Image (cartoon, rainbow, N blue to C red):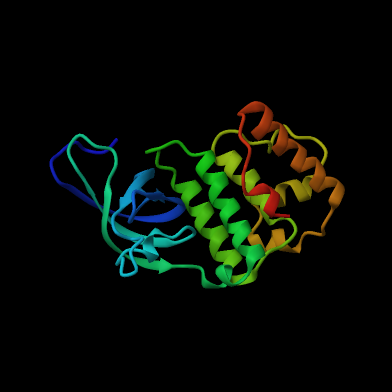
Length: 215
């Protein structure tokens, strides 16, 4: 939990998972930070044409943020920061952008508020950096989701039967380059997608909104 002192200012590295409008000129932005975990932040005035923090409030942005937290609140305001990476190559390619937004949604849905998880943070950051550098590939979505599930304590690594062992281990623990080098296999991919469907829809009752837009 955040310290309840008057006028607390703190800084942290963070990745924007999603944003939505607030009133006429503001945004509520979900930021997944390294040290403080996930929380919603008020970005004031960023919907104005000259909003100074507009770039830092965009989805799929990695930044170094400064926040102000008023006494008695868990809803900080962003007061400054600097962009570390806006993943320009991802934004140039619609397929890559959809996949990046899917990455962010999976993390958002499987991450409790104010629960720091450096492993999950580094996983998302590394996946976005890889996607920005190399574009999409057949197994990326499935490998990323399997890893987030494992980091969240819902993993299938030791229980799922079906995929060939080397493939299964590469999806869970191989480098992103190794995942990219895996041969596409529609039958195994359908098996993995079935695991996801049963978990998200039947077990925890979540429909991933970005799923229809990714391969």
